[in-house]
Image (cartoon, rainbow, N blue to C red; front, side, top):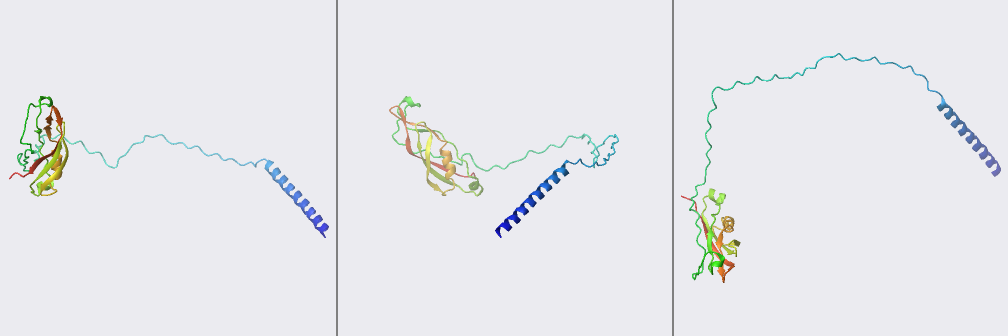
Amino acid sequence: MNVARLGLAGVLAVAVTFGLLFLMHSLIEADRRAPEEVEQKKVADIHMPERAIETQYDTAKPDKPEDPEEPPPEMPEPEFDTPDVSPDAMNMAAPRINPNLNVKGVGFGGGDGEYLPIVKVQPQYPRRALSRGIEGWVIVEFTVTTNGSVRDPVVVEAQPPNVFNRAAMKAALKFKYKPRVIDGEPVEVPGVRNKITFAIAK
C-alpha cells in the first residue's frame, strides 16, 4: 500500500515538474518575439499667427487734475489743554537737620560739615488724582549716601494713603545732597525725612 502511494506521488511530481518547465519555456519564447508594427500617425503642425498683444484695462485712467489757482487755506494751529497746575503747588519742605550744624567749606576736603540739599526735583502729579481734583502730601524717609544721592526711600506717612506714594518716591530718588563730612571723610546719613505736598492751583 505504501509502495503504491510513493509511486503515485513520484509520477505526479514528475508531471508537475515537466509542466512548470514547459510553462517557463513558453513564457520565454513569447518574450523573444518582435513587437507588432503599429501604424504611426503624424500630428499636423500648428502655426500661431503673429500679432501684437495689447493690454486692456477695465477702467480708463482719470485725467490729471488742473493746478489750483488759489493757494489752500491756512489751517489753524491745534490747541492742547494743559492741566491747571501751579509751579509752586508742590511744596517740598526742608529736611530734618541736626540743630548743631558746623558747615565749613563746600567740597569734601574743605572740613567737617552737615549734609545740605543741592537739587530737589518736583514730582509728577498723578493723572488720576489730578482729574479727580485730589490733593495731599507724603512724608518720605531715605538715606543720603556718601556721594550725595538718595537710597532706599520709604513712605512714612501719607494723606490720602496710597495716592501719591509712587510719585513721591520717584522724585526723592532724584534728589541730590552735599554729603555729611566727618574728619574730612563723607559718611552716610540715614533717617532723612522730606515732606512733599501735592496741591492743584486754584
